[in-house]
Image (cartoon, rainbow, N blue to C red; front, side, top):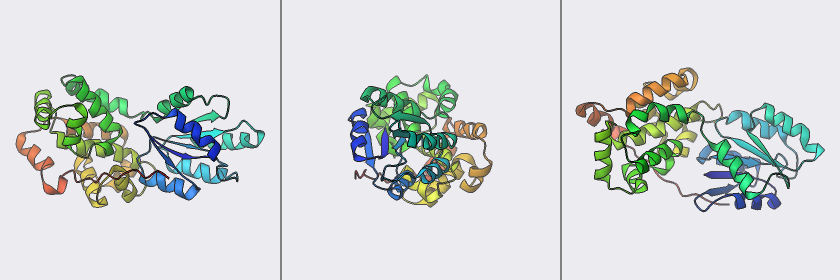
Length: 283
């Protein structure tokens, strides 16, 4: 889980206490730096206060919530009358949840909220559609593939999937063949395309933002792979491709194809998964 926090210093420690060793925390010190994190980092959730910089700015908070609806926003505020109207406005614009200072902010309760809101609602339909293949795979590999759909930036290539599943690359390819899934390279591309599709539905993200979030070295590569998976350019997908249709095309991409087609679709240089993993910078 990668969490962005824009909070008074006294509250940031409570968020840290709710995280585990494998989680990552990105701290923003202004509204501008928070928006930059949202645009460029593959965040699981944003924890914020509308008065984090000492001045109540509900307008800026609501604008971010509306613009980036695929990112869950959790307000962390004291239960003061001055925050009541802000909470109402932010809730109407799509704020996911509320944590009250010294009320429901124990580490265990805080973590439960973060895990719940960071779940991707669309994921269950994709996983269900892939069950006929996933059921034939070793369970550790299935868990890694589901995580790759959630956090594709962690898996830039087949080697990363194999390492996370505790198997060799050759064993990974054998597992894909026996389950009738297309190649691991295709899965990497499809997982990135799935998350890219969800980001494209947010009005605030430009294509270059999404490419950076997903670890692509150039927006052109992202746009090309989106078109390869879904059959449409990103601009059309943003406005016209409904989720049910997107899932059908995604499942077709993940499924086994004849070997000649597989080589053409997954091994051409223009379609290779050329991603760059960017180190996290903690502020």
